[in-house]
Length: 341
Image 1 (cartoon, rainbow, N blue to C red):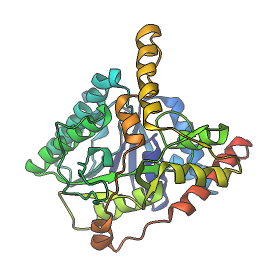
Image 2: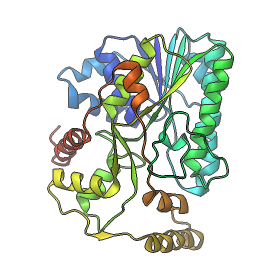
Image 3: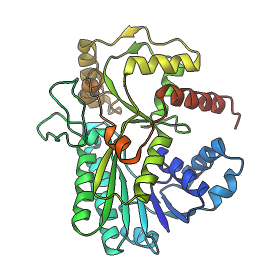
Image 4: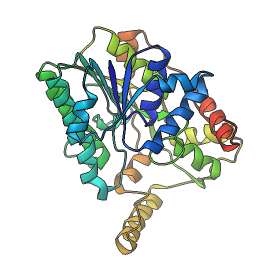
């Protein structure tokens, strides 16, 4: 039996589709019943037999901080894919991020230990990796994390979650950690998912930024996870990035695929510095949600390039070109927009 936590998220839903399509025996956790419809909808993108594939999954309502329900979810399980996480870059949500990403992962690791799980795969992020002073130097799996750096609250908690996984490996739980870049996939057009970027670009964005970061297709993430779990590979982490791309290039490629006008104005560093301060002030005065933090403003103009050679060499893995991924996601976005599902 395979357990997937966070089965209703972007990675979880696509992973479940792949595992179900492969005929695996699967159990998955969810927190709110209404989110199950979104998973079923994702399945419908890729199969005419979506309903039966979805029904082949044993769904369990369980929060990763609810130990009794988690204990039930672990019964008879041999392999675990831990995809559940909270994605936010709002500094005021730091304690909730800690509770879900670090404490929740600690709970999963502890149950893996007590249930003698054969192997655990944890979905981390490139945010949990270190950076080089020279922005042109590629970041790899050994690039040291710098605690003194002005890291985002999300990055801090994903790094903390990784430490919990590595603790588990010291207690005889074999594990794989994957560090995906910005994951491109369909069906999640709002919230913290990259799908929100497609929606924003379609609705019209005035400004572009010139920062560089790594991107990857959701099925590349899923396929790499499954293959790493099936191979005799353990206690290692792998960067999952297809291409390093500027935000401007990404925005232009998406705008072209959606047949809308791309952003025309550059958001200069001084403008971003003013914007995040105004955003902070608005939050303090009116209690509104933060939309731009100091760290996200900084990352928007930062250059971070990632080395994907370890995965390529280990598995002979070939990543999907980002242009192809963008076009496929855009087609599904437009299909959803028309209500043609």
